[in-house]
Length: 185
Length: 185
Image (cartoon, rainbow over all chains, first blue to last red):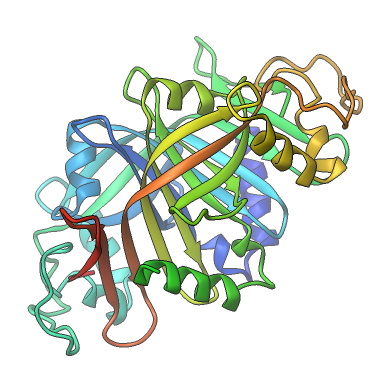
């Protein structure tokens, strides 16, 4: 297991009782070169080093990743004062691409989580202040529900605790082995 | 005062005892169209709606903003379950541009904060595991110390608490007045 992955596993364990262990920020770029950044819920890390997020094909995030697959995830753990920046290549999986994978992620969501996909087009005008109406049911995976797989290519790790502070870069060498380099914070 | 600013002031008050009230994530784009995202310390919000951050002209963040001034700040408050996304235009102020402003920000830093600017070139190879050596002194503002002013052009506000959840966009109309639009989360 690469060293950064051992370190992340430890950070997640140490912060397991805090909200910050459940989400990170994801930056993408639109077709005009504008950066976007939002908080996303962490749904796991695969054996082959992909961060997993669920999303909606009607969001800007989806549109942006379809046009530019480069992304950076930033995960700051306040409790341990550690930051991980993950340079990623994003890919999108819909129910047409991989029905078992997408269904499995849909079924793992709580009813409250599923509801967020059944309120209508994200970012479209909301005409009433009343509670949002759910359209659809919780059994069937909506066609706009999708899974984002963010393949980690490089990790920029920063630990602000202690003296010296520590910043480490992790990347794969030409043989595909993860190597690290200590840098000035 | 625009409504989003009143709301942010309230969020900052409600979370004042938490670490999350002190930093947010800032996304920028490099010359090749790759997104970058990192945690930055909040240093205030000016009367004319600029988020203030201090930085270093030797960082990627500086290089990126010099080439592409578009940025997005994402501030998530776990305690109140609110997210603010600020679409910004960034500008950089060095001691050559505005000595009083830059000196004032330098002088507000703690010694530990100043140290971080005196360890050498950020991101350059670190050759020893021993404590980083401070080069320079705390009295003089280093020439690479700078202030980032992030002019807020649009706000995407999300409140995950309660039913209905609420998402609101704030932007300036053609007369420069802040208006809002409720949208589907």
